[in-house]
Image (tube, rainbow, N blue to C red; front, side, top):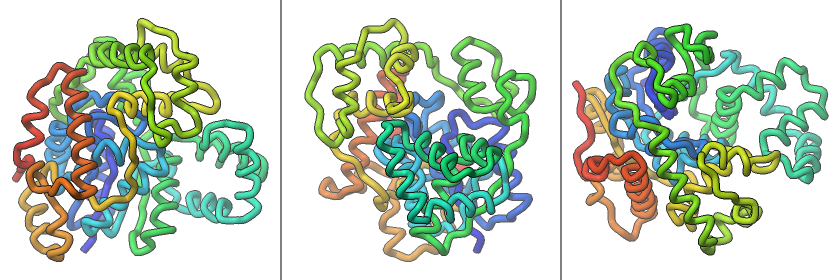
Length: 382
C-alpha cells in the first residue's frame, strides 16, 4: 500500500494546501493520506491562527484520512527536531511515503546537500563557523559559501520550505531509509504576499487577519480565525510579568544562556512583535525567542524527542479501517481520550504539557470551549 504522510501546520488551511493535497492524489494516487499537524502554537513559536480541532476538521474536509496530533513539546522546536519528531510519529503509524511542498521539486538538490554535509571537511568547517555565534541556519549557509557552492543553490537552501524538506530528507536517510520521499513544487503565486492571487502564503493570510483585510477567497472552506492582535496582547502581558519577576529556569531551557540574555536585555514594550524584534539577533532568531517565551510561560523543564506519541484528532471511515489492519502493538499505542493514558508514561507527560498549552491558548483567545474538546472523541468525517 502507498501510505502517504504529510506534515502540515495548517495555520490556517488555505488554497495552497488544497492544491498540495490534490496534487498528491493526482500524481501519487495514495491508498491513504495521514497528516500530522501542530496544535496551538507553531514550530516557530507563533500563536496558531486556528485551533487544533478546526485544523483537524479542515484536513478531513480536504480529503485527508487520518489526522494525528503533533503536540506542543514535540512540534514547537527547531526545524531539525521538528522534522525528526514528525517523521517518527508518521513512521510509527505505518507511513511509507513522505510528501512535502517545496520551492523546487528536484530531489537531487536534497541529495547534493546531504552528501556534502556528510563529509568530514564540511563538518570541520561548520564547527569552526559555529564559533562566530550565528544561528544554525546561517552557519550552515556560511559553510556552503566556504565550499563555493553555486549561489543559486544557496539561495534555494535559504528558502523556508526547502530548508524544512532538507531536514525531513536527513531524518529519513539516517533513520528511516525504508520511507520514500517526494516533493511537490509550490506554485509561484503560493508565495505571493500581495493578495492578488487566489493562492497566497499562510503568512499573507495571517497578516490580512491582523490588519482586518478580507481573506475569505484564500480559504477553500470557512474557518474561524482568531483575533491575533488580541491574543498577542494577552501573551505580552504574561511575558512582561515573567521578565519583571525574573523567575529561575532550569538549565535545560536556559541552554546557551538564552534566558539570561532575555532577562538582561528585556525592556517593557507595548507590542509583542516589537519585543521579539528588539531581542532577536544573529545568534538568537525571532523563532528562538518566541519558543523560549512559550517554554518560560509553560514552565517547561524537559524536552522529548522522537517519542511514540500517537494521538488521533480526526478520521474518516477509510482511516478507521486502516487502523483496524495495524499490528496490535501499534494499535494499542493510538489514543484519543485523555483518560486512556497511564500517568506514569512518557506519553502522559507529553499530553500534560499539551493540555497546558491548550489552557494557555484558550486564555489568549478567550475560548473556554477548547479544554472541554480535549476530553471529547476525535472528529469523524465520512
